[in-house]
Length: 515
Image (cartoon, rainbow, N blue to C red; front, top):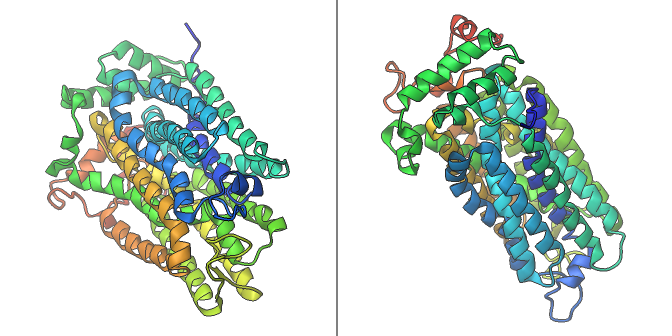
């Protein structure tokens, strides 16, 4: 029998490589679409002037990955319920390697899209099931930090692949983009091998009636090898009680998520992921080179200047990993959306007042760079772009992955998180396709669209998103079904910070989170 590792940080570090794959994909496009090799090889201009694909086609190329992710995220719940969280992630890595082979060998745009759809299928499975896997295996007091590593892995994937793509941009010909796309297969191989040495989710094992294996995993991960650990006994009892309550319902389909009992939390989980996309973060991730072209950054410094925001993304995610279980989910979401709205409105105002229309040709052949600014206005746009990313990184970035798995009972968690994540990907797809033409057609007003969404999500979170930090997964149900609360809504969201008393938390062996 293969030795299974018990350290929760090691388990999370291996599992979240699945998030890193998404990060690799983001920057492999954002860095490469600005390169001359890519723009010449996939050129669609009439005079073959190396202007690259048309804006709508470029949007389709970027969005194709999200399209595959949307499809995969929907069925990933059924897949992981059938074969286990761990095996589902391992299967996804095989699909990713296939996608890398097709993408790196792409001879034309359709072949490139097929490869990106395959990559998307992997990302859809991993993005939905890695947070479920970690949340089901982690202790409550560490759950936010460990699940939040998913977002940190995404930021590292973005940063590493961006600099690989930047280095390869100095190569001549198609190898400038083929090499980075091929190298993306390496972390997937590492993930596949690493998952062999990780235990299965104890809650999934319990739902399948494999109680001895469930207990062994809890002894390994919660008891550190001590079968008499009080942690193990408490956790096993909690799981046992909930499995008995949910007996036979682990086969439930999506229709149960739409029942009056679960509709509220289904909508919360779904909108957590949808709002994370409607912040406009993809404008700053996929198309940052277009934004900085509009800000007047020249070709020589374009990629290097763009890369700074990826460094900010990595660094600013760290505070969330340290303090998210102490601060809570609600304050992070409210602060993040408020700050992002501010910087989006600021950029819209700067372009509206100081922007100069560049005409149909754009800047240096970048048709999407339809408005340009210079001088102090240029510096302000760049600064607001960096501050926007610095606001997203410790708030909506990690919390959008941490929060959905905490909302649902065990028998629905896999499918519920899959449904929530599908919302992320369908809007990722729509925005990936929408933004390039939007920069051409409505120009700076694109920023107003996202700023407005940020304001709306702030109001939505305040009134309907409850606090879940530090709660045992099996106890979140009480908050949503509190008979003293609002029917089908439970305890009002703004009153949930101190819903659980310290004595209840101590009873379950958790750390006390100070006010």
